[in-house]
Length: 197
Image 1 (cartoon, rainbow, N blue to C red):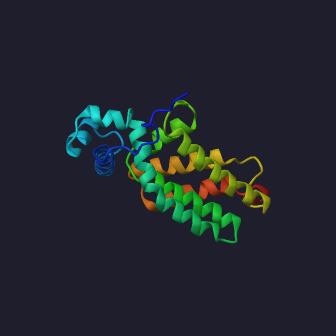
Image 2 (cartoon, rainbow, N blue to C red):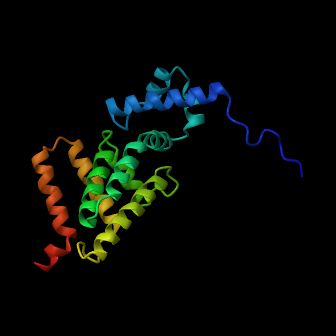
């Protein structure tokens, strides 16, 4: 069987350039207008037609997943710092705050993430990034459970949704004082110490 020589070739320079420009432009639009921004406006500002945008990113979720991937370096760096903490309860708390901040990057971001995590859209390009974050959260939860800090019934999925919910609340104008109280309520809900009190 003969394999085509085209297989494994790098994309043409203009294709790579269009993709990079679309990602940069989409990120600006998501920051300004939220994840519901007009994709046609993204394409127009990037200097390409809507067809080019949809060839690179067939759905809004595909574009959002690609933009989030470009922003994931900060979350990975935070995770590396958190891994150095000796206290599993503190590590879990810091991870939840890091996710909350990541989910707050764009207005409207928590909704598609929660939908993907609930598997309402199993084919969504956001499902894999959500699964990765849920798995990481589960590892922090299990370490804190092993140390006796977190109730045995709590799962990473639960706290992933809690972080999404806080990001949604934050994005709707809730003040930091109220957010602090909500974080404390969530922590008391998963804390083994509070369960024993």
